[in-house]
Image (cartoon, rainbow, N blue to C red; front, side):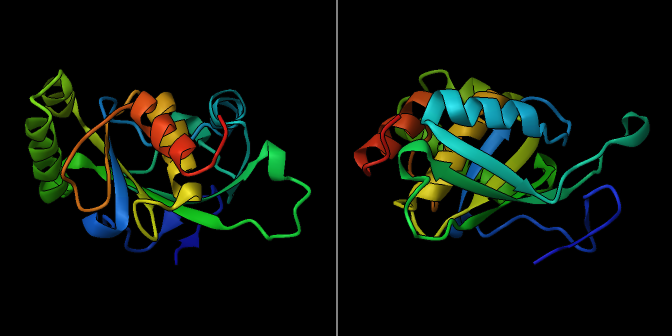
Length: 181
């Protein structure tokens, strides 16, 4: 796990996660800003969840880290009263140029579905956001993915690749696993 500085930025070495153990989102914007208010609003409105981040992020003098990480806790609004403790999901962000293998997976995923405009989106990608996952059926990770797909306007490559999809595909997969949106 990561250590954090006074701004809540990950300190030390931050590298891309393993492609077979994470969802990848290829964002067109180069910035690494984590906007907790916006993400929390999107969690509530797009996947019916409460989102909390750890640690809190600060961006003094409009500066941004080159790489960063955060822990995201998602709890479905229907399950807030359950006794089950929520799980933190790791999110890492790095410039996409640091992960050429992920870009290649995304291009192959776009090719597998006949492009459908995703090939253009992959070409515009500048920043990689990865969501650690136990597997492709990890509902907490998939809920985070849906929020990030909406917030970043980024296509999603599931663990191990093979396809690519957007917010609608993420929500459809989440609902198929029992998470009402």
